[in-house]
Image 1 (cartoon, rainbow, N blue to C red):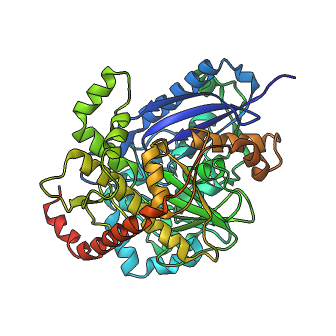
Image 2 (cartoon, helix red, strand yellow):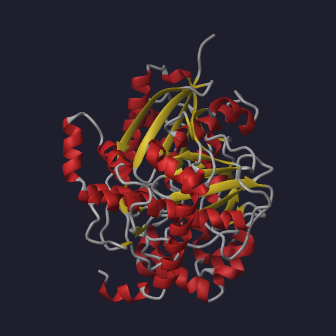
Image 3 (spheres, rainbow, N blue to C red):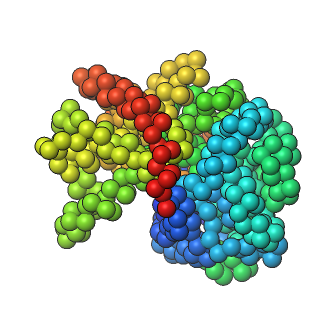
Length: 512
C-alpha cells in the first residue's frame, strides 16, 4: 500500500521548523531556519514579514527534499506559531508595514496597566477567561491605533503568525480556534470574537480587522495555491488544516490527554499547562483557552522568562566556550552542561531573576543577579541562570496547583531546554515529580502533523492520534535529598519578587 505523510510547521520564538511524519508518528525529516530578531527600541521585538515568509518556503522545501517524499503523498499541511503578536495586512494581502510584531514585544505595556486599573480587564474576564499582557494581538492593535493611525487605516486584517502563513500558502484569511482563544479577544462561551470585548478596551472599531471565519484545529480550511506550491515544493491543492497555537501543539504532542500530567515547555517562553473540564476565570490566573479534545479546556501559566534568558547569557558571555566547542565539532550548550554540572547543587548563593524580556509578575521588572560574592565564577552565574528560569516556572506552577482538585503525578517536558539532562534533573528535584522526556524533537511540528492526521481521517480524534504519536524517551526520578534546598531557595526568590516590586517603575526614567 502506498505510504502517506503529514507536514507540520512551527514558527517559534527562536527559529522556524518543518517536519514530515508518517501515519505512525515517526519523524521522517525536519528542517529549520533562524529569523533575525529586530529590536528598534527597548522592549520592542519585530521580524521582517518578507524574511518570515521566505524562511517558511525554505524549510518546507528542505524538509521535502531531505525526506525524499513525493509531495503528492503528503495528506495535508498544518502550522503552529507563537501565539499573539501581530501581522498587519492590507486589503491586497500585502504587509501594511514591513515588520511583524513578535509576542515578546512590550511596547503596549502602558495599555495593560490602564486596562487593569480602569476596570476594563475585569469587564472582559468572564468572557475571555484570561489575563491581558503587552504582546497580545489586541494590545498591539490598541498601540497601533493610537501611535500609528496611518498603519491601521491601511490594515484590512490583523493576523497571527500561523494565520499569516495560511494566507500565504492558500490565499485565504482564516483564523483557527485554539490560537484565537489565546488573544483576549474571543468569547470562550460563544467561541466568537466579541464586540463587547473590543469596546471595553477602546478598540471597538477594529473588530472588523479580525478574520471573519474561525475553523477547528483539524478542519480543512483551504488549499495550497499554485504560486505557493512553486515557492515551497508542495503540490498544488494540498489541504491545509486549522493547526494549533504553539502551547497547544506541544501539549497534545507530548500526549496530554488527561488532567493528572503537567506539560512544561522549556523554550523561548516558560509555559506550564494542564487540561481540565472547567473554565478558570480568575484575576490572578494567566489563561484558560480551548483544547482540541472537546471535553477539556487548557489551563496555562507562563511568561517570557525561560530559555531566551539562557540564550542571552550564552550570546554575551560565552564566546570563548562557543569557539572551543566549535573546534571540537560540538555545541556551546555542551559546554553549558559541563559548567553547570561542575557546580554542586548547593554551592551558590546567587539568584537570577529571569526578566530580560519582561514578565507578568511586574510589567516593569528587570533581570538581575542577586547574591554575588568574590568566590563566584562564570559557572556559578550560569547555574544561577538555569535555576532562575526554573524558579519562574515554579512560580507559575504554584498558580496552576491553586486551582486544581488533585495534585500532578508526573511531568512531560519539551522545548530546547529538555535536551539538558542536568536541567531536567534539576526540575525533577525541585518539583519532586518524575519527568518524562518525549522521544520526538520537534513537538510543535508533530502537534500540527496530528491535526493533519485527524483532519484527513487517518485517526478519528486527537486522543487516538496521541496514543500513537506520543512516545517517551527517558524518565527522570526526583532526588528527595535535594528537595529542601530548592524549596528554601525558591522561597527567597519569591521574597525578592515582592521586595523589588516597588523599585522597577523607577527604571522607566533611564530607559531608552
